Amino acid sequence: MNRKGAPHDAPTAEALSAPAFALLVCGLGTYLGWQTVGISPTLFPRPQAMSAQVLELANYLQTALFLVLLAVLARVALRRGGGLISSRLLVLSAPALMCASTVCAYASGWVFDQPLGTVAGVALGASKAALLLLWSECLCRVRFRDALLCVALVYATAFSLCLLVAGLKPLPALIVHAVLPLLSGAALLALRFDGAFVALGSAPPREAGSASLLPLRLFVGVGLFGAVSLLTNSLSEEKSSATAELNTLIAGLAVSAIIALLARRRSGGFDFMLLYRMLTPLIIVSIIPVLTLESGNQQYEAFVIGAGWTFFRIFTWTLWCSIALRSRVPAATVFAAGQFSLTACSTLAQALYDGFLQEAGVSLPVTISGIIALAVAVSAFVMSEGDIRRFFERRKARRQPADDEEAFARCARRAACEFGLSNREEEIAVLVMKGKNNAVIEKLLCITESTLRTHLRNIYGKAGVHSRQELADTLASYLDDA
Image 1 (cartoon, rainbow, N blue to C red):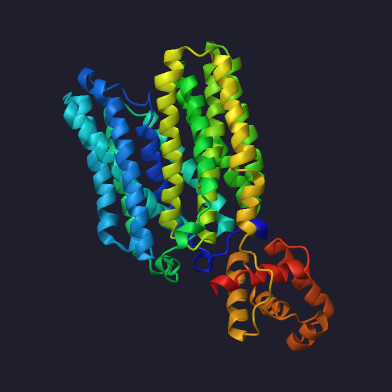
Image 2: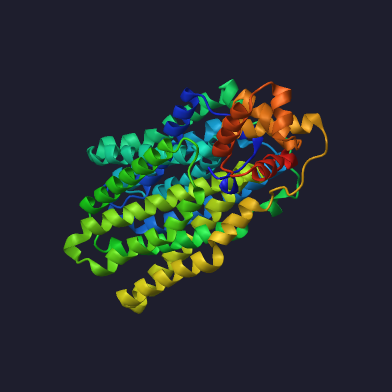
């Protein structure tokens, strides 16, 4: 991973153990699988008549409560200066409330047709905000070089669960959906009692005013891109069917698997800026089939839209993770801010579509043109490549640290954890930071010139730099966190 696009928060730089990584992927994937099944229009039959009439209102109520809960928990995380995962009550109650919400909603809306119970059950689903932020803290214990792989595998797990639910009869599907939060909570609880995993999250207290370090423009940009995706899906929903949604899930699984394979093959890290450069073209490409394909080809349309939406979500989670790793703000606060913007913008877009675009009878070509224009404007003016690059570079140190042996050692140790440097390479990194030339390094470490050059080439490759000065600047950028 190029250092310009990589975070450097040291407490999260060490690699997770394989069991912890697997638990993280399965637990977070189960949470996202529960969420994806819950918003599906076709995986389950429609609720009974009276409950169906209040379902839209219940969904808006859940969204409002979800946003409030995000804001409250973000504030709590900021005040605590540490992680929400340290709260046993929150870890136990969040999945239990989500399970209760699912059971209540299905019992009231699908079995007994009790509108008030349906509203209460759906509204209680806002408790998903707590589990989302708990898992965000776990995700930020992954090294950034592994974050893309982790997020891609998480979404592959989520879509696999959705396909499993799609293959079940309605009653077993409802039961499985209700159990998913408990499985996610069990994985979270297991990670919480993993001493090595918890140790990765230890961090110095955050400053009270550190919220100002959040890149708000990037959050707004993600929210507007989310609005574009939602409007595209809404235009396509007029032709939706169970087959079309199945194709969407298959597309999501395929994209997740492909990104995971690419991230796995690039063991040195993936170029994050490349992900961003692909985002806008893929979103626009996913919009075009809505306009060009006839109603009989909705399965292809659903496949393309599903691919674009999945890529956007993987990019979003990876971006939030990188921001959390680079800023001094708690991970829960970062993800809360990002999800707040995404949910608020998407909800406003849905309200615009339901309350204006459909009622006003705006033609499809005009609507599609407006959506494409919005995507281009966001890419050019709100969340441009320059905005992202400036955020990743803004804390890059342009000075060498003071002649402090301990500071040098801490900087090199953190870089070694993030980039996977060997002990010998870490020793060389310390000497490079001190400004020692090759002859001095060879003498101090008792190595030959060719051996040193080999080590330097390996360090350059792992750190994503091309010169001695770039390496020194990269290592010095850890000084603020040392």
